[in-house]
Amino acid sequence: MVLKALKVVILCLVVPALLAMPVFAQSFSSLVAQAAVLNQQWVNQLDTALNATTLSGVQAGATTAIATGKQIQALLNEALPLAPDDASRSRISGLLAHVNAALQDGQQAVQATNFDTARGDVNAMHGEAAEALNEFPTTMLPQSGGVPLKLPLLVGAWALFFGYSMRRRLSPMPLKS
Image (tube, rainbow, N blue to C red):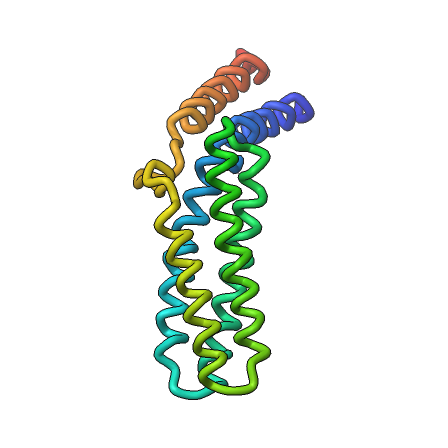
């Protein structure tokens, strides 16, 4: 009896979780949208780095921007094989070309030994990052609304109702006196 109740409880917990998993899977569109949001942050970070007045300030800003650029690069590399058509693959390849060029400029800025050279490299990095931002498809920008929860909620409600009805069926009848 306890074993059956435990199975029902586990079933009620596992089924909604399994149904919710595809909702959280990364799709081509979600990866590109994440990269677009990060690319805007990247450009903002580079604006900040360009406002620095010392070599160490420019290089610190470049280091921060390199980390963000590598995240964008990883997202685009993950999206590339998921691209639905040749045009999308071409667009992602073009974005990656800008990101890769910007990362090279950033590495040069970090290794520069004088302020003007570092600032010039960060400026080149900013140009590539801004160009990439302009090339993101506007249809790939994130939409508001969040994760759709209707299906997992319905399945959870059904599982609770099913568990309650099974409990009522399986519970022993009270003895009549």
